[in-house]
Image (cartoon, rainbow, N blue to C red; front, side):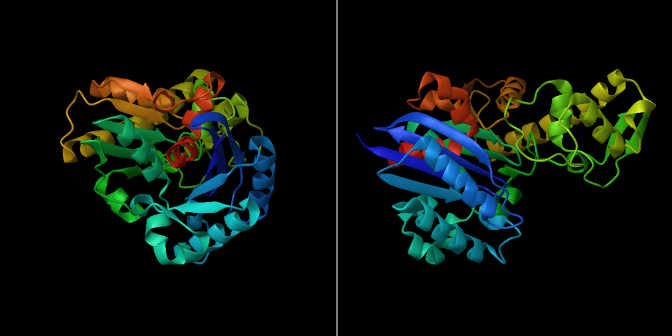
Length: 338
């Protein structure tokens, strides 16, 4: 039996997926914020290795090189590549179109390795679909990648290029800042400017609405307090200069619904832009990945597109289908390398 484990080292999460002869048999996500150093990542790697077991081959992609811990992306790519080799043993680093690179050569391929996890997902979709639009709505960002002619048809590759092309939108279901979702909101019949402080995140919005998937929010809240609906209302109220007691629960639910709608509109606008640039028609199927599957399905409905979930493209143990969507880059790497 051939065993491959795909690893996705992000700035705040570690994701792992195990493939046995190409079938995904284990997948998991761990909190591993890199902002204060690599200690939590090392603990997460140890836990993940215990959970997913040994492998014949480990394949790594990353976005964690962006963390403040590192002086530059080059520094981050080199550090994380070396760390992965030390902790995991037999490791290849994913370099997008350039394939797999040995860790000691990572410094020669920084532009190809840095934040290339989106490309792993897109490459997997391109193997399975002639035409599609991949929308991966994660905890922090959303990737929108066109597939045309069975190939990845993205206009950008680096973060800067993809931001300019609309293929990377900095909004996520959990860690997206409410203050970055809009600059004003409707409250008591007036447009109210938002306070530019990180008082609340989109996790609070989706917690209030009951649309936050179980286990998706692994980070501390903006104020360090509990993850309850009441506490989320209090955090959201602060965004408009208020306390939760200043209005009834229905008012804060309506406000949360407005922010969720603003997030959807931003992603739907980006999807329309990407579809137009890649000459994709309204009939193009959308492939949904990430923790925001429900939101992506709603975007597909609005655009008049059929929608399939990422797990449908893989051989996956039935109980792991949702988890595989949440850990799409890791699962894609495991499948591609198999």
